[in-house]
Every structure is written in C-alpha cells, then in structure tokens.
Image (cartoon, rainbow, N blue to C red; front, top):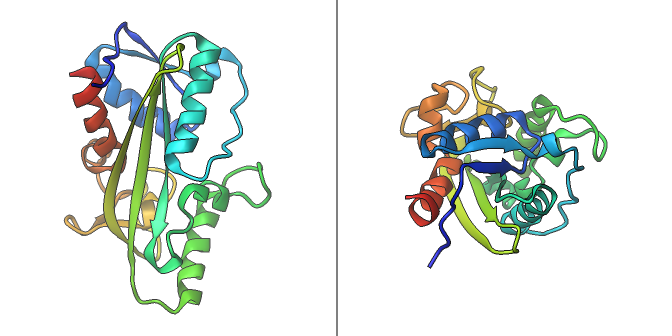
Length: 204
C-alpha cells in the first residue's frame, strides 16, 4: 500500500520554471506549499539513469535529503515513433548546443523535424511520458508514470506551454499543447495522468 503524504510542505525537485508552474498548480488544491529545490541552494544532481523513473528517483531523493522534507520530482520527455523513441530521456539535451549549455527548444523542435524527415517515415505519432517520484527523507519512494498520445506537426503552433508543446498535436482537439489553454492542458497532459495516480495513492 502506498504511503500517504502528510504535512503541508512539498519540495519540487526541478529548476524548470514551466514544470514548477504546472506541478505547483496540481498540488495547491491539496493544501501543499510547493517549494522549489532551488531555494535550498543545492546543485542539480547528475541524471545518470537510463529511464524516466530512474532519473526522477535521483532528483527526488537528492532534493529530499537536501531539504529534509518530502520531495516530488518529474522526469519527462517526448518519444517519437519515427525516431525509435528519441529524444526520450534526452529531450532536454536536444535543446542544448553544447552539453550543459543554455536550452533552446526552438532548436530542439527543429532537430526533431529534421530527424523525422531524414528517417523517411511517414508516421507522425509520438507521446509525452512523465514519471513522478515522491521521496521521503527516510529513503522511501512512490513512483507513477503517465502518458499522453499525440502527433508531431510542423511548423510549431501556439504560444502557450513550453518545451516541445508547439509541435505536439493532441488529436482529439486538433490543436497543439501550445494552442490550448494551460488549464485544459493540465487536465490532459502526461503530467496530469501521472499526478492523478499519485493523488489516488498518496493524497486522496
């Protein structure tokens, strides 16, 4: 049986402003004060795992140990069928010109588009995957994975969202994640799927 999350403080193990906004919006209704791990001045740990779950666990446990509080980490990415699942866990790296350098997701989206053209595949299908790991200072963890299916479109469309949202079409609406209202995206996204599972197990 999953462990329930008690108290009113939850550290969010991310320095990504877009992710922080989305996760903060998800936890607020449950009475939690979301605190960025950046407020503790600790560097981000190296994400050395080969899966979303592994990297989420690395970040969650590091943030929990640094803060002494329960910590929630997200590891997510875009998996494109024509690219055999790439960029996957390296989705953020595709936005970097040099390893560890500034991230430019316009560059990342163009890289996906060019790679799909080079693949000669006419399959536009893709999915966003999100793994949430909730970790406690004593080392306990709970992990949940969410998925949303979609298609890659070009050129990018919309100005909402972040990351790859402008090229990710949600077929049921015929719009990209960057074209829909953020509140609607929050209810449909891979992160919302994973968070619904976390809520049922640890918050409800």
